[in-house]
Length: 139
Image 1 (tube, rainbow, N blue to C red):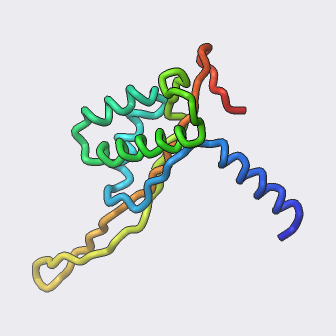
Image 2: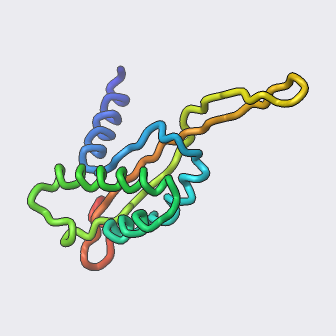
């Protein structure tokens, strides 16, 4: 590996250490259905986002609620001694990517078969804290 590539990789690793995130992989929900729920909480304060996910009737909201709690726990590990209420945590970035698709066959009339695609997705959630003026604290 060249020196330039090594330096950029080290910078990326240092930035990842400061960033607080959680990743959910191979969730057995279609990405389209998951994006409907993630759009509800994008940019929202953490406690409010938890309330929205608890009251949401979609199945995908249960998975996102667990993911958000995991991201909060990751933040607490990196920021020991700091209370969540004082730090004004919010959902900085959340995005959904398509995951593995399982292909199945369903019998159809006259000896044919229909293809069924069982989709899954990957969700990445990033938290950040705001100061009192409403600006984020990251560089």
